[in-house]
Length: 96
Image (tube, rainbow, N blue to C red; front, side, top):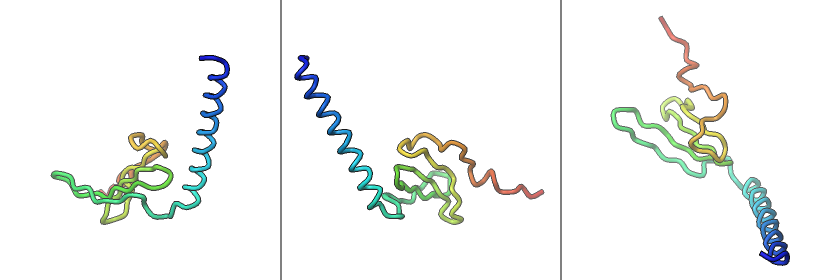
């Protein structure tokens, strides 16, 4: 790649990064408090759960009966459990 081609490439990459930054700010400004996606997921031999995808790219799994959060991802990493997350069931006191 010639120096001129490299400079053009670098300028295009910087413009793309700026555009992405502006689009992120725009989306954050206009994203509602509601889920971007929400569906009930039926599971064989288990109770159904409510799956939500919310801004900024967080996957949340809830118990539709209690509203307890069963799992929550890191933003933008739907397969990565949120750091420090404790499932609601682990917080429920054990009665003996």
